[in-house]
Length: 330
Image 1 (spheres, rainbow, N blue to C red):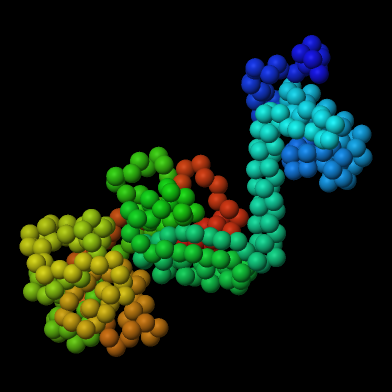
Image 2 (image 1 turned 180 degrees about the vertical axis):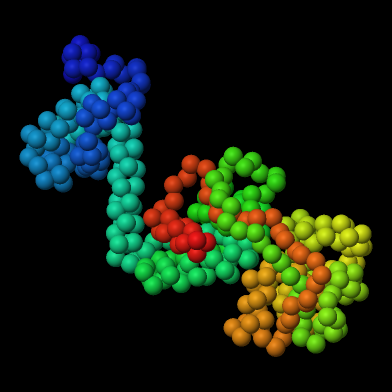
């Protein structure tokens, strides 16, 4: 085609790269079959082969190609004796169309998997208390309905989980928004206040007291979460508010397992979420090894929330787990 014929059919000359915006393209009639056709042309390099892939006649494929060029206002391919070659416009369109078609296939696969019980993958995180009293029951219910969903959960500090969420390695989290991050990056729903208690081994000297004060614990080793963690800061605040010196002998760890082992085998004291403590001292946990100290003060930690990244859509599988957690809250 010469430049004049380009103009007569609404083509933009080769030096102009501006295309209509997406709304205009949709309104002007760009269809899913157009995207399939440009991908078929890119794969085969022949109109006849693309027509066969689309299960249509070659004349119908040629008409569809002309229709696409009229809609986009650019020449998408050049014809040669042995086939066609996509123009830069055609290659750009094919690349974008291929991405859209792949995404649509993923949508179809994920919804189909959920419907059939095969599932999909969910990645989320939680601080300790809701992991015990919300996440575990929610997962149990999901397993009954969709046994093949691949569930991945991290139990960590809010700071760690928030950065994983922003890096798109988590779908959502049950935690708190750290003070050093912009809250506008998240959408959150407050769902509960975390309460904590003090735990020691069975037979610990402190258990001989009918009621234990914070000052009574200062003669023993403490197992704490690392500095800066919320429960650690909460306990330090309680010590300071009562004018009691902070413990001098401290072991720092994020591991609940290591914490319970150290407490069970030494005279160390630890602060731990009530839900976790109730499980550990119950018949399903380490009954006989650990005990909760009766204390004359409360340990209330900042409320935790159900948090997603701003403007990020959850996958069907992630939305299912999210909704189940909400059901547990209700």
